[in-house]
Image (cartoon, rainbow, N blue to C red):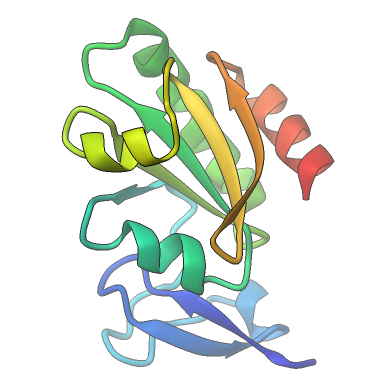
Length: 143
């Protein structure tokens, strides 16, 4: 199998990983930490574009805000989905209050909104809170 690129969730280094090794506790070549943690990764303005465009696996972004009740209710379900879906895709979160420019770039009008990116391009979008099983089903139907 061909190597794939995975962006480290700890140091944002792009790693070339054998596709077979991805399932077996692959580690970052620079910081030596696990490339997958089974937890959503918090993105920000500095690393957002790198993660959505340089990962060869799909990236699911939860656009949320701290004041949003449905976002808070969905957070544990999103974390549960991360444990089930990694390493097939990376689950991430973006605080729209702190990163308003990115939220505007993607036309986020209601939160929570989930967007699946593949090679930097949006391939699916879903607005509204969902349970963990619903998130997994929706993602699996889109990738």
